[in-house]
Structures are given as C-alpha cells and as structure tokens.
Length: 325
Image (cartoon, rainbow, N blue to C red; front, side, top):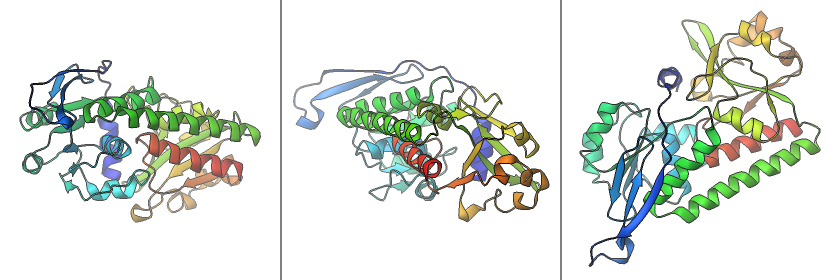
C-alpha cells in the first residue's frame, strides 16, 4: 500500500476527460438474446469501443473499476492485486474467485490473454504502452482515473459507462440513487447533531527514511468532495493536484489547521499506523489542538479512499458515526 501511496501521487497528472456516451445498434441476425444488439461506446480518451453485446467476461486493472463492476453485479474474471483489493476495498467484496492479473501498474498481458475477456476496463493511470498491448487482447474501455474538478461526477460517469458496456444501466442508476440518498441522510444527521459546517481534515501517512510523510485530501479529493456534500468544511488550506486533489505535507504542516478541526484517517494494522506509533512520540504532533482535544479519528479499515459509491457510502457512515456519537 505504501508503494501505492507514492506511485499514485506520481500518476496524478491531469488527463483530458471526454463525456462518455453509449449507443446501441442492431447486430447481425442469428445472435442470441443476450447479444441481440451491439454496443458502441466512446471512452474517456475519445476512443470508440464496439462490443457484440453486453460484456460478460470482464477484466479490471484498477480497484475503483473493479468496485464498479461488483456494484453492478458483474463478477470480473480478472482483477489486479486481488489480495490488495480484499484488504483495502471491503465495501464491495468480490463474490467470485477472479484470476490475479498482476499489479495495477503492470498487469500481466499473458494472464489477461489466457482469460479471453470480452472487455478490459482500465484507467488513464495505466501507461499508454500497456493500454496499447491490452487492445491487442480485447476491447479496452479506458476511464479517467480521477478529476479534482468534479470527483463525484467522475465517479458516477465511470459507473454509468461501465453499466452501458455490461448491460447493467439500471443497476448503475440504482447505485447512484443510493449514494445520493446516503449523502442526504448524512447531511441531515450532521445538522441535527449540530455538526454541520464542522472543519474536517482527512489525511493518510506513511514512513519513509524514518520520517512520517502525510498526504492531505483537499477539497479536490474524492473524500474532500464527499465531506463537502454532507455539509462539512475542509480544513486543509493546501492546493491539491489536478487529478486526485492530494497535497503532500509533514507534521509541522499540520499547525495550519484550525483549533476546532476534526482529524480523520484510515489505516491498516498489517502496514502499521504512523499516527499512533511514530507520531505518538512526536512533540509537534502532541502539541496540535485537535490531538489534545482527542479529535483524531481512525476510521475502519477497508474503506478505499479512491473507490466507487459503495466505498464512499462506507466512508460517510464511518465519519458521521464518529462525529455524532
């Protein structure tokens, strides 16, 4: 995971997002009922993808698209880093036993080819050379990995596009409605508890060269967007990158947070908790107002900070739970 934290920041370059659209057209006669119509899609890179019918055997090269597939009721035949997904994205657990296709940054082409997929769903974080190789195996639906200008809209567009490719548009609409309902419910709950407008700072941390580095989830991050949607105020003053809305800081950088800040993070027992371990002995950390006030909240493990609607609903439940208890 820590390698991912560093790699993800490096991959956070903004990419051109084109509005995804889907059309259907009559297919050749003789097709069975499940493939009665071919499907033509335009992905987020502007590439045209044509499928003989709704994709059934689908490979996902990134966890957020795998979560979208599971949410839509599609069991992927191949998943990048299955063990990691099971650890970090428990909101949408795998129902089958997909083939592990390798790492998210370097999927195994031979393994994917052996699965004979109808469709490969990748993100714009995957190197162009890898996508080019994947297109020789099967149609590739490439979705934009993140967009700090509208993370929630990006999340929903990804879900809708995958829904069109897999013939699960009704499930995609339902998942979007459930997310909106959860947002409204949390906003009402926080307001009723007098917590509307509370300042929240979400971060994750990792240790490198015996130093604790922090990533701040600014307004442009996915969790920052969700915080705003449920009526909270982001305490970070830092500017995030144009894709993920993340910024890097250190312990001293936390001093810019206001005295009424609520601080939240998601850790992992298997990889250590720098907030409770390394920082527990740090004088600068211990002197922070929110630390003194015991306003530091470790949310449950297994909520993927860059996931789909299911992960975001799990985050909302966890955060509103600690703020209103």
